[in-house]
Image (cartoon, rainbow, N blue to C red; front, side):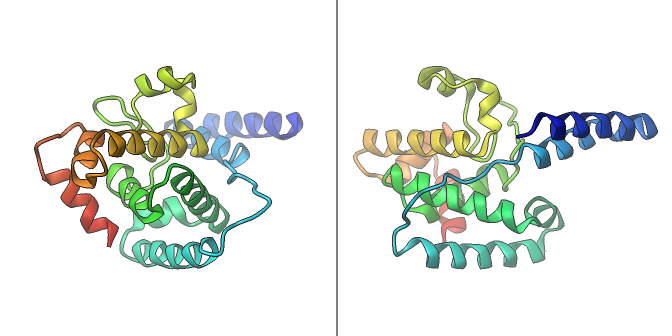
Length: 193
């Protein structure tokens, strides 16, 4: 990104914040998010299933957006929506996961909020704990990065699937920290449809 653009964004944020101080944080996040938007992994080739999955998933998200103003606000940018879906597909396939399962986890965990933080400190789309970033050598602040968050979330889910010998129900419960309970896996199954 051009340094001039970043400087212009910072000056704009300062001017807007001075005019309306209570909106300062929202403006900073929105402006920086736009200026430093995540971009999907560029890949020279895509598999035959990716394009139909992207189209079908985009239509499903648009349908969900019609019923939720908050979701519509988060996903109203078509380029962002497309980058999100491309990244989900790529990272899920890379980890040997069903992209629809990963999409369901994101829907339940953060409802597509990039900057979601749980009461336990989990962050981002897939609600990754900062302790996982330490294990794989990522900065905890990178957990709000689209690719980093989804890559780590998929790796964690794959780890739990391997640990549970392919038992999706138990792996999902482990992912949520609720082994022995059915509530979380059932929420994922409902969103997975």
